[in-house]
Length: 408
Image (cartoon, rainbow, N blue to C red; front, side):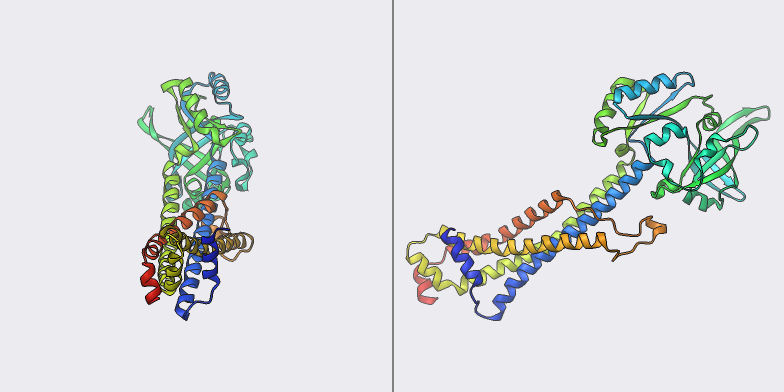
C-alpha cells in the first residue's frame, strides 16, 4: 500500500468538519451510483428490444436472400449452385410480388410471397407463426377452387376478413386479353392467419403456394428468388459477398441486415442517444466529486503544509487527491453496477412493467445484459470521475507549505 493511498483512505474515513462536507461526499457517491445503474438498466432493456426485434425479423426472413428470375426447369440447378457457394444449411425458392387485396368494400396493398412449405420452413421459422388455420392447406388445393392464401394478422384485420373468407388479388401488372389490357386478378381463399410478432410483416405480407404465385405473376412456373439459412448468422456478410462474385450482375444478393438497414440504424442511434443523455447524470456527479475535493483541500490545508515541509513534493499531494477521487468514484461505480444488474435481473424475472400484447406481442419488457456494455459504462464513468479530480489535485499541489502552516 502506497503512502498516498494510505493518506487518502484515512482522509475518506476521517470525520469531516461540518455536515456539508459529508453530504457532498454522499451525493458524489450516490450520483455516480444512480448514473451507472440507470445507464446499465437502460442499455439492458434496449439490448433486449433489439434482440427481440432481430429474432422476429430472422424468424420471418432468410439470413440471405437472392433475387433474380429463374425458369422452371433451371431453379433446381441454380439452387444447388447458390447453396454450395454460400455454404448455406438450407435453401428455399420463392416468388415475390406486390398486389392489391380486396374484400367486399375494403382494399389494401400487400406483398405476396409464394413458397414451398417443405423447404421454406427449413430457412425460417414461418411454420410456427400461424394463429389460425394450417399450412397443410397449401398441399390440399383442388383444381377449379380458389387457391389458399395466408394473411398477416394485421393485414386481415385491416381488410375485415377471417379464415374461410375469399379475397381478390389484383396485380399492378396488366394482362393483354381479347377485351384489351386489363389488370390481372385472381380469387384466393383465406386459409389461415400469420403472426410473426413484427408489425411490418404482419401488416403487409400474404403467403400462398409457389405454383399459384408463379402463375399469377406470369413467371410460368419459375421463381424470382431464393432464401438461404446459414449455420452461423455472423457469416452472412461474408457469404453474401461470395455469392455476389459467383452469380454476377444478373442476381441481387442481400442479407437480413441489408433488408432492414434503416431499422437497425435507428435502433443503434436511439441506444447511443439514450446513453449520452444518461451519461449526463454521471457528469453532474463528477462536479460533486470536484467540489468535495476542493473543500477537502481547504480543510486539510495544515496537513498539506506539514507534508510539504517534511519533503513531500507537489506530485505526492496530487496523488493523494487523485486517490481520494478514485475511491469515491470506485465506491459509486461498484454500487451502480450492483444496482443496475440487480434491477435488470429483477425486471427480467418479475413482470413489474407489463406491455400490451396486442401492440408489442410481448407482455414483459425484454432485458439482455451484456458484459461489454457494463465494462464500457464502468470505464466511461471512471474516466469522467478522474477528469474531475485534475483541477482540485493541481490546486492542492500548488499550496505553499509556509502559508499552509501559518494560515491552516
